[in-house]
Length: 324
Ligand SMILES: NCc1[nH]cc(CCC(=O)O)c1CC(=O)O
Image (cartoon, rainbow, N blue to C red; front, top):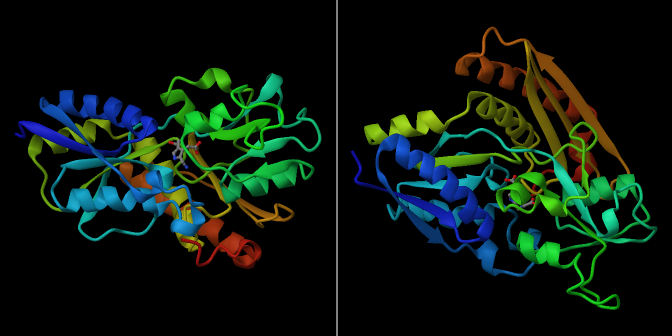
């Protein structure tokens, strides 16, 4: 048994909060000590736009190199920041129970998307959120922002004077991240997943390890923190991205759920200007809720959704191909 399990994470407040929570569970299940190993990634230090530094995969690669170099035993990612392709020498070992997958609006004066004044300045850097905003409210002034959750929320506070170009009327943020940081009091509207599908895997964490045999205690602990329904629904959502050959910053929203006997998947591809979109939804009836049957249902619905999206012109719509 490992005396100490070293857990690699990004150093941001959000990453630290979510890693510490899951690492504590793994430590007690494995009856081992936990050591948190912060890894600085280019995505954390750069102020350039995400697209220009290589998409959201930049957050994952430094962590993965640290795992391959045996500087830690496992790493914790936000699943939505993890590219869909396999990574040589590593494998996804567990997906803990998903938090809220919705996006939220955090606006001044309690505003919602409906009530924001004409021309209000709304911050987001995500092509999907930009397209969704343009579709819903073409009059809004969308401001491309980067940075951590606290700095984004600050721009909607009175830290910035009315004439300050940094000041915003609202920002769009994932409920999961706000929840993990204890900042849900800033939310003025929760956006319904069926009208506003979010990034594949949003709200989920993923634990990655080196391929090959694991210490027995660690392997049992990873099974204990894995959540079957989360693994299957996020698999379906990520297969949509993979099937479109799109990257994790592509304007694609996907939502899967398991409701009684039905495995349901809906996905929407947006044009970057938000003026057009294509949606496809399919359901399957898994034979049981075993991991194998749920994964089979996930592959089945994803295959049908991808075929329908591509058949309806999704690849041309969003220039999704080639996006990192
Ligand atoms: N793109 C950054 C990012 N990566 C993961 C989260 C938190 C939500 C999650 O775990 O899905 C966020 C912040 C956000 O989108 O508001």
